[in-house]
Structures are given as structure tokens and as C-alpha cells.
Amino acid sequence: MNVIAALAERVAALAADDDTAEATRTLVRDTLAVGLAGRIAPHAAAVAQAAEGWGPGAAAQAFVHGFRIHALEWDAVHEGAVVHALSAVTAAVRAAARRDGARDLAPMLEAIHAGVEVACLLGVAATGPLRFFRPATAGAVGAAAAVARLLGLPPERIAHALALGVGFAGGTMQAHLEGSVALPLQVAAAARAGLAAADLAARGLTGPAGALDGPFGYFPLFDEGAPDRHVEGFGRRILEVSVKPWPSGRASHGVLEALARVRARHPAAAIARVEAHVPPLVVRLVGRPWRPDMTPAWARLCLPFLVALMLADGQIDPRRFHAAAFTDPALKALGERVRLVNDGNPDPNALRPQRIVVHFRDAPPEEVILPGVLGSPEAPLSAEQRRAKWAFALELAGLPPDLDPLADLQRDLAP
Figure 1 (cartoon, rainbow, N blue to C red):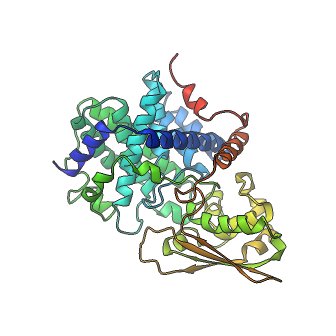
Figure 2: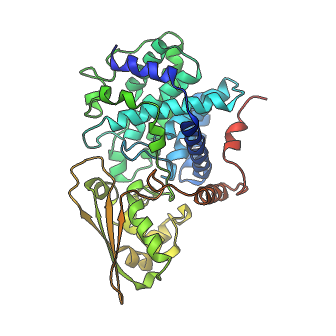
Figure 3: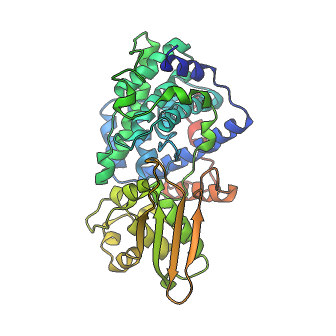
């Protein structure tokens, strides 16, 4: 049995236990809250208007929801895989369930769990640096797996859905490098691609058996790696997914967490400079310069700007990502206090550990060691912190802060 067939067997047979079922429910609730907040993201209205021209079908809905979920850079991420594993998957499952008149939330959650496992496996199997945008490439294949599971396809058909998902996958790191709105568009396209792949497989269309490990398969074209070594871990990786407390690139969160801790005890004016010793990938992803003409997408990945907001406001508010803030000299001065130092970590996909040294004007420096960043399984958000995030997301969406984000999904279920 080749890798894609073995993976399809796992997708079909996946059964959650109490831990993975609770994790799935919590992560889907978080993803839905982030997607609701994504309604206010730049270009969200234009994306919805463009999708209207494609008709009222599930493909357009998957695209719109995929965009909204990733548009604020607030969606959950598997750090070891460097994959926003729920984003395209949740958007695709939601669209398929609504189209097909789903009546029960449980199969949807099971399908999302399966898709997350596939996306995470592709990420943890990668051994080389990011070239393609993994949340989109792995996300498309994960979305195909999730919808195939939701449709109740047998393993041989799921294998074809996975293979077609590989064929439809796309999205490069160039959008990340330039801070382009194409980044969430790539996640949106992955959700739509996964839905299409599963639908076609359900109708008898086939994909290549070597779509993952053949000479022109996912490995090595999108990523270097050996997926067969990681199939055995299937089913438990959803427990490794991190929830993001702030709407910014995950690579920024270690420094933000350290500053949030320090700022709770010291005024921002007391901080002279911040020195962050971090893996090379963190430098690559968020060590970009402040530009007065930067886009919101660039700013969400610009550590100096994020540091300035944390020092000034004590939080990262997506409503602050606009030209007036980008050209504010007082904010710029705050952002100039941070310096990233490459710690030489040999793992090209590592986001941790991190060591942040905060220097004060009139006090000895403080060192913050972060083996795990806030929101990770090693340092999970408390129930109160999760509720506060969801309430803030709902506030941004103009919805009651005590609304359960899962209610937004349950409204899609047929009566």
C-alpha cells in the first residue's frame, strides 16, 4: 500500500477520543470566531462581491470563509508543521455541509479533525525551508480529506480526493514576503480546491497514485520530506495545534508575550530596548522593516510595528492597522526598541525556543525564556483567555460578545 492509500485508510477510520474531540471542538470554535472577525478585514467585502459572481454555490462560500478565517492572521497554527491547519479545512467542510443539508454537528467536527490531521502530517513531514505557502498547499489536501470524510467516501475514493487535492494545490511564499493580500486568498483558494477535489472523487474521477511521494508528487515538488514516516502519528496531532492570542504572524508571538508580561509590571516608557534571540525562521517571517506605506498584511508580519502596538496599547487590535498608525512617529519610536538576533537553530521550521531580554532605563534587565509560546500546548490559553479572545473577535464582527461562535456554524444546519 502506497502512502496516499495508507493515509486514506486513516482518514476513513479516524475515531476521536475524549481529548481529541474536545480539542477539535475548541479549535473549531476559535476558527469560527476568527472568521467572523475577518468580516472587517481589508478587502473582505471585495472578496465577497467577487464570489457573488460565481453563483451561490458551495465553492464560492468555501472561498469567502477561507479568506475571512486567515485574513487577520489570527487562525490556529500547528507550529511544528508551520500550517494553519484548520483554516481551509473548516471553510471547505462548512460549505459542503451547508450545501448538502447537514443536520448534525458531530460529523462535521469529525471531518474537520481528519482534514487537520492530513494537513499537519504534510507539514511535520517537511524537512526543508518554506518555499510554497504551506497553509495553502497542505491546506488544500487537508480540505479534500475533510470533505471526502464528510461525504462518507470509502478509502479508495478518499485516496483520489487527496490526489486531486495535490493537483489543485498552490500558493507560494512570495505573497508572505511582500505582505500581499494574496496570502489569505491562497487559503481561500485551498478551501475551494479541497471541496472540488472531494466532489470530483465522489463522482468517480481519479488522481495519480503517486501524488504524494512520486517523482512529481507533493514531495519533493512543494516540500522536501518523507510522509510515510509520519503516518503512524495520525489522529493525535490536533492536540499539538496552537491557538493565537493576537491577530499577527505566529512568529511574532514570543516577543509579544514577553512584552505583555513585562508591561503588566512596568510602564512602556521604562523599557529602553528589547533583544529577542529567536530561530532563523522567526527572523525570516517577521524580521521585516517598518515602512510608512506598508499594507495591513505587511504590518501583521512586521515585528517593530507589533511591538509598538503592544507597548502603546497592551494589545494587538486589527483596527489599528491603517496608514495613520503606520506613519505615527511616536509609534515608530517604540518599534525601534526591538532587535532580533538569529540564534542559529538548525531546524528550518522551528519557531521556538525563544529568549527575550528586556532592558530598562533605570533597572536591571529581565530575561524571559519561552520553550513554548502562549497558546501552544506547552503554554495553553486559559478558559478565561479563550473566552476573552472570542468575545473580542465577536465585538469586531459587531456581534454580541457572549455568543458562542459555534452557533454561527449550527445556524447552517438544516432544521
